[in-house]
Length: 170
Image 1 (cartoon, rainbow, N blue to C red):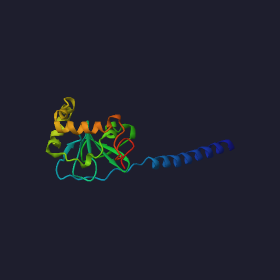
Image 2: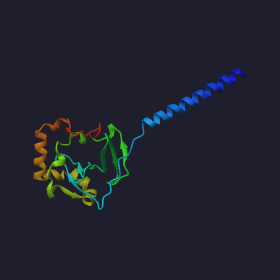
Image 3: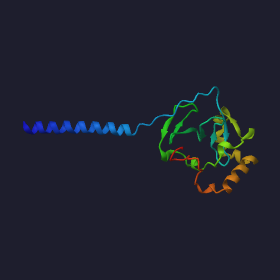
Image 4: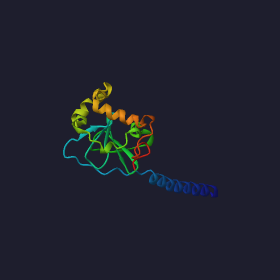
């Protein structure tokens, strides 16, 4: 009887401890999703020279399209979605494409002009074809931006200084 009681007490203590540990582990892994962004219409995008990464211009935050997914840095973490308006799911650091480390400095301030702007529907329909056929490589202005970026030493994968990349967004 004493053995049974001791066993039950030990089992109960183990359960209580594991519940406390599980709650702490759960609290440590909670990730807050970025705020919702409402678009009045489907967004226009610009292609960032030297990459096949597309960015929604003229908004305060970065929203990127790359190889079929939308990416969004928020509070030091990256999020991914199949649609430009979400829902956004957390992406672990090793699953963020390395191209985001290699985006050129100052891409937000560039004058992209009409040659670099693409409507959402055109991008959605053509991005695979454009990437496979190196569509943007045939545009002189895009090539000039790309070459300027490479001449400044970004070929080595250092990334730019704005804090993008698998470690997050500052």
